[in-house]
Image (cartoon, rainbow, N blue to C red; front, side):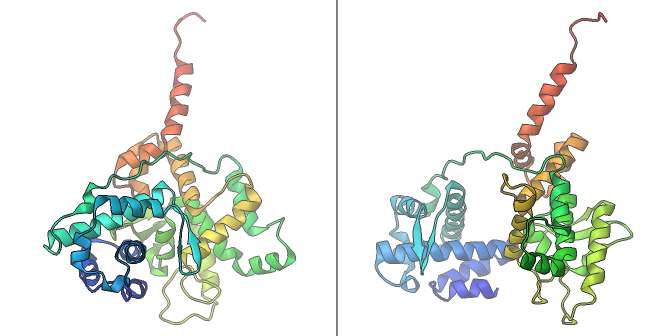
Length: 332
């Protein structure tokens, strides 16, 4: 809420209505992303179309926007500056920002605040399928070994790693053993775990909660971290499972950086992120179960077609293997 408020203070008052209206059917993370995207949208139109501060853009101004203006905004997103930073967006980044703008215009139109929904006329950028990168074979062992005993770190890095390796091992093991999203991981609390049942409660994308189960490797790693966590000088009201060196809930960026750090040592030719560890789990689960619906359910995909796109390459491998098992002759 604090992050959203920071973006809204520079936007017109009717933006508050939008975020109030979507609060009950969106997650806080979704609303943060919407706030970021709309701040970029208003900054562009303030500087390039209306020539006035973003906060002064009226509903009548929005009604004057044409589809070509939004297409110009998408083109602008390829390479732009905000503040003192330069940003770039590929087609997926553009598609997400267009989705945010569409939701905003749809809300205003449905509530009779604007007369037309021009954003609905702008087509989504064509998305190209990306190669699915994941850890294969002994690469899983290598990244876990890198967490416990890194070989290429400097002495300073090794000293730092000694302070975090129990936590980092639990984080990497949890990704590989359950396939949860990085946003789900940082939101975990200690009380979400039931070690008798090897189960934990996770808040999914969209705000729904579900129970997931994990193997003993995850149980041992998380239990070891919780035992270490209990020795830290934490605030008594701190429930976060994973804690930063500042003794606060760990953030997404920190988790992304630590995964990248250990992957660089273990698999230098692959760019491994928390999402790639999630893909590794999904791949292994699909290979074991051969059931795309189970994989979709465990990963929290609302649409099984999303899962199919991610694991199409594995299906191709299976088709090739099956073909070699078909015999045209009964002769020995």
